[in-house]
Length: 310
Image 1 (tube, helix red, strand yellow):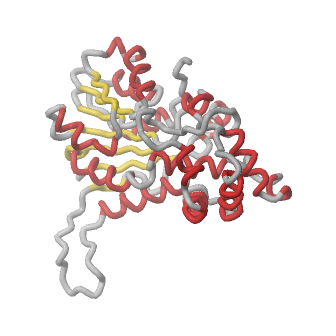
Image 2: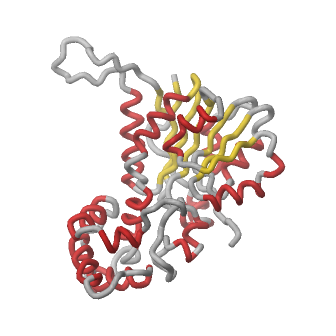
Image 3: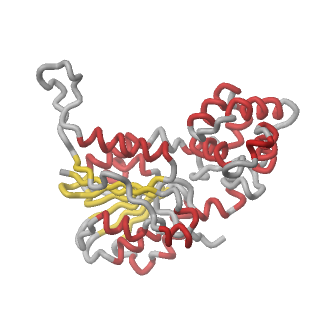
């Protein structure tokens, strides 16, 4: 299947990076390489490091970015390992990092990956197909309490307790093996009246399981802190999120990096030695235009936050 993905907030993200022609930049979520191509078009002697944990994205980028092969380095890895990736490349600091979080259009549209509640496929949801834990393991092995926790916390699903209970009851007879089987269980758990309101009944649960499979939230704060530590002065970090949990982590981590002191207010003098590392460029997140939402509905929940190293 051809790797298709429409880059969200394309112009806003590239403008936010404030690209220098001789700079070194990282696209930490390569995806369909749309943002990467835009960065490369703005470079002269500079370099781009494209990172993705999905080997399909890497293979696609090798073809799509072939004309730029003298100034692009592709790395099959997770952006959470950004410091070790740079160490392996013998690079100390960079001028900008872009993260476009969440699942790509390609991953959603390729049924076999098991990300979509709209297509029947084996329960998978791994962004890195070489990782050991899949959605099947979570759905069939997590306790009722664990399932309730992730569906409530990561999916913000009000019916999480019933869904978890129904999943556990269902798998007592046989394992839940496909996305269609999981959707069927979710629909049974959510009362009919509630299913008629809002998004597809499987949306929040699928989001929660995907986040758990790929540890999307647990790695984010530390990754942002590591990115800040490898930015040059005036280097930019641009992060695009797609749901409130991600956005909250980005916003709060930016606030932490902006603080000059984290001592309790009752301390008469600062004892923490915390120094301000960034200035926040976007006091409020940048949202997609109405035109972008109409032409690419998957952009509707996107938010872009930008910070600059001081």
